[in-house]
Length: 113
Image (cartoon, rainbow, N blue to C red):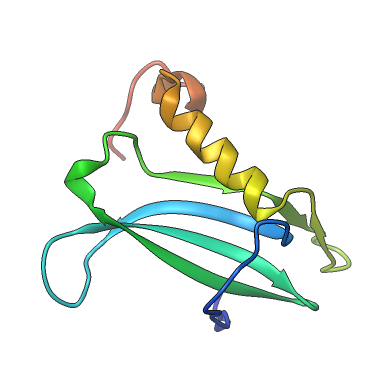
């Protein structure tokens, strides 16, 4: 990466969304929290919107990253396939289902490097 991603204070459900992540992180004070990050398109740039989902220990589902678009490596053009609402729905569906993380990754065991 190396570039600074501009932040935004609002998003709309029909806005084009490049990526949704739900990751655990430490706030400046307190215990770890889970944060939902939306990387939305505004004009020709990606902007970040962050939602605090509360304490990490309250979330049983693993962290996730759900792509909603791609960047063409040759032309550097950004192609968006999903909206904020669609990626939010995908995240909710993943939490409800009983996915085996190792099966999704296509491995039968975890190896330490």
